Length: 154
Image (cartoon, rainbow, N blue to C red; front, side, top):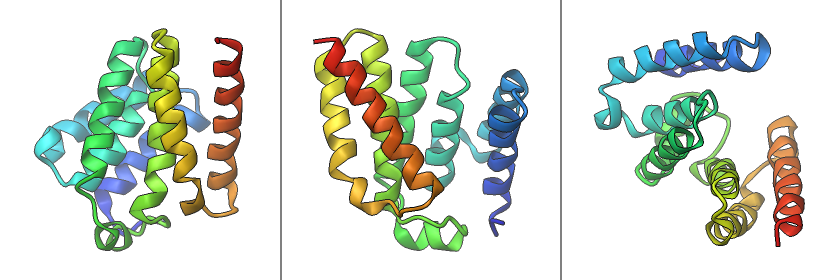
């Protein structure tokens, strides 16, 4: 359980989307949280995690890409101390493989295979920051699947 109430609310939205299949309800909750934190002016950790989660519930790939780019920009402002204080069981470096995986997939969907491969490479470069746990294995499987898709798209 996280010690940060905003992170807990974001977690509720993730639960709605991933475990209950309530994508629209998750998107609505994320939009409310976005307003509550002050949008891009909010705490960088909140902006990063919320934008990363909001990207997952978008129907339009251009909107998904916009949210993923916001998440990546915010990650550059997050410190390991902030992550630890929020009760997140990752270092800042552990955020990047997932962020780059999602960006790579967006660019693949948009047909920009060069950028897709660049972000895939960046995700792979940061994979050492992930643990051998459920989350780490999820991201690694995602990277393998995306690499196969990009190989097929050559």
